Image 1 (tube, rainbow over the protein chains, first blue to last red):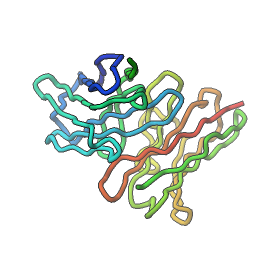
Image 2 (cartoon, rainbow over the protein chains, first blue to last red):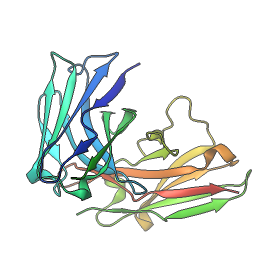
Image 3 (tube, chains in turn purple, red):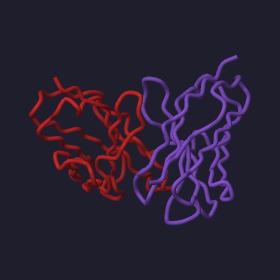
Image 4 (cartoon, chains in turn yellow, green):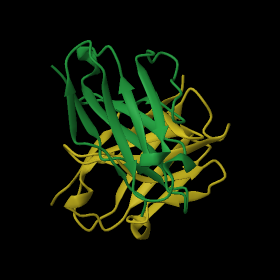
Length: 118
Length: 112
């Protein structure tokens, strides 16, 4: 069974860069017809799709975040990563990494809370 | 931008049936598959319906999904409600223009 685990700083200062990594275990990140996504959820609010990366390295980003966002894949470590620049308090949320098989997210990480505050 | 609209909350009694709607803002909701996720407090979402009406293994057949093109809506129906079904439910589909993932705002189901 594939498992995903987010890691990264829980506190980021305003205007700095938020960096998170998702480590995949129980399967290879480069095999199969999967895409790898980041999704976030501010406290008490709904889910917001951030973006996804395919095993080819191709990316799709949420248009509202695109100018600040970079996603990458490290097949040697079986990880994928997120970098979000120029963060503000509005970026405070639980960040999930997830695997999609064609249409739906079949596997999720447990989520990691990132707070943007000085 | 394509959006999915859900009611903020619904409620029903144990043993009853409840339906949660998810309405597309433009285009045809039938053009892209709709998924439904259940999220309990403090936990990551899990899939209860994918590709409009398919249930992952382990999801009871009390959960069903459908598409109504006339109202440009998808629906999640839960029959024989149990207290354990109390959770937030999110629909999800895709923006036809670029294939971007779109989530509905979520519906809080209360079983009382």
